Image (tube, rainbow, N blue to C red):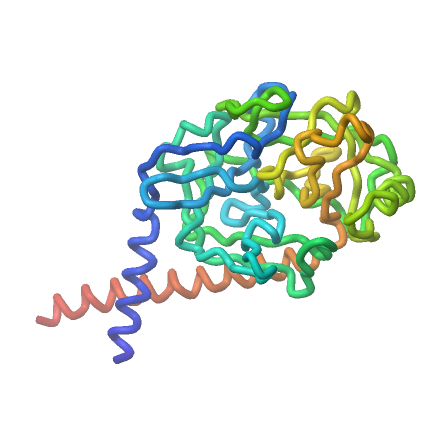
Length: 309
């Protein structure tokens, strides 16, 4: 029985890389950064597209950022959907894949696509409307090649960037308000850190929006013309070269710009979660090492049995 379990584990490990999907990547119209600029690619090799698989089609669902060659940091809300009764429906890992290492979503070569082994949502996450601890980590079955991607360093623990610090956000999306055609090229937008107290006051005055907590950080576009959209949750806010925030509340493609053009976007503040992030990535890497050891043991066992026979 033990031999059978080891064989199944090793077979799973060996075959997992071959599970990449040969499909056409599609994009829904209202799910991307609008009025952004084309990326220069080499600066954004951390950016990932988290995609939902349905049949032979993989559709962009969320953004995210590589923090190791095997781990993606994203929003918790990218790991579930909300049912008609308000219930949380977790996404099955077999329905997820991650794209990275190119600025064109159509560049789906094998070294740019990875399947998801599992994901970890922050244990104290509370769903909408509060979005408390809206952060999650995807653990990939096989790491991306070092020649294809470049993970982002985390912001220092408990650090807070100064107001008006210039940052950037990257994602795939439509270029103009109301466009039904998403950009095939990775889009980038410059933002600045918004004063936390002012941000909280704005959101307190807007009906049905939750509190802006100390574990959150606000940012806004300089010209109030570019914004993230509904499917850009999980996009990384990068300040001074470090992963500073994970988007969970975009401005909904600037649909409310005529009412309030300066409403900021809210990100989960990464520096509050560095210990948790490191514990998750360390434990999942250790598990992979154990599975790899089982694989090697199984291979040697097979060789030994053949020699013995």
